[in-house]
Image 1 (cartoon, rainbow, N blue to C red):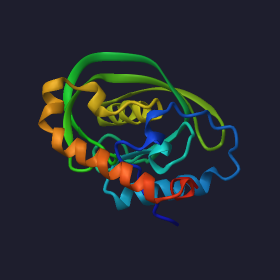
Image 2: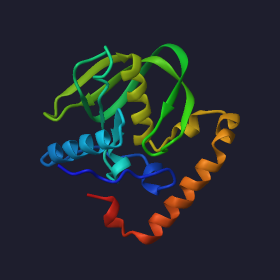
Image 3: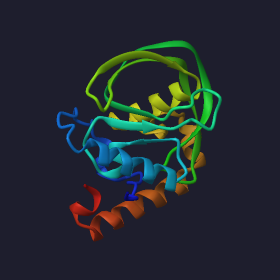
Length: 182
């Protein structure tokens, strides 16, 4: 399989709402490449737009916890409800390397989604899996964790965010569009 570059904060592909998946014929290869890329970057979740694909697709692997023994693939997802108490938890992001922010999110989420077999499901998730789902759904909707924190929290990472933006502009200037899209 292939390890793909992960778009960093400031790349325009990360600011747009992703389109629904309608072609499932090559989705298996895309998903395998996403898992390879996520594992290489030592993450627990990855949205398709983080590797330059405009598609409502994300993957999660929290098998290192007691929550689940399975990896997860979510296609054409939509959050139907948020449940439970809101709590703060420090979140990192593969598109914001070296930055972890305290983000407030509800404990549980009800998600409608498709799997690779194109079957629709509706399930409630909680714990780290719920938090990761909310994080990746934010990506698919063009929202970053920095958009979910206070100005004071953002100020702590002002220099790092400026550097990521500058690096992103340099990369965009020196790479063709094809370098970011499968």
